[in-house]
Amino acid sequence: QVQLVESGGGSVQAGDSLTLSCTVSERTFTWAGMGWFRQAPGKEREFVASITRAGGTPLYAESVQGRFTISRDIAANSIYLQMDNLKSEDTAVYYCAASKVYSISYSPARYESWGQGTLVTVSS
Image 1 (cartoon, rainbow, N blue to C red):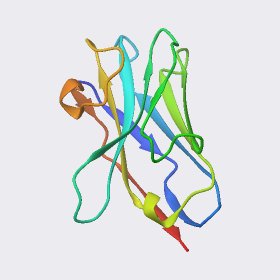
Image 2 (cartoon, helix red, strand yellow):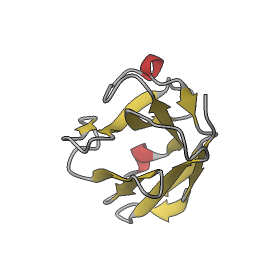
Image 3 (spheres, helix red, strand yellow):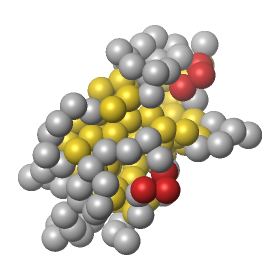
């Protein structure tokens, strides 16, 4: 496991934008895939987006397709989640995750390293 440090959460209004960042603390860690998940109060953790280190086509949950964009910066050892046109139902704690084995996946079980989470609150 490796430490993942997230930032960028906050409170916004519906329709606003927000960008989350996730940095891998260990620079020698070579990840194959990274992703964003979220967990709303009283609900299970759900997949949001995933991206490969190689830069292939990202994967998105249907609920965020067209509004969220995941990207990566290999040199910075970081991934980002640009969230546009936010809705109240996007309110959740957002977690980034990393896998050394799987290049892209919906399943949280395939990620062995997780961040501490950052809260996003969207008011309507």
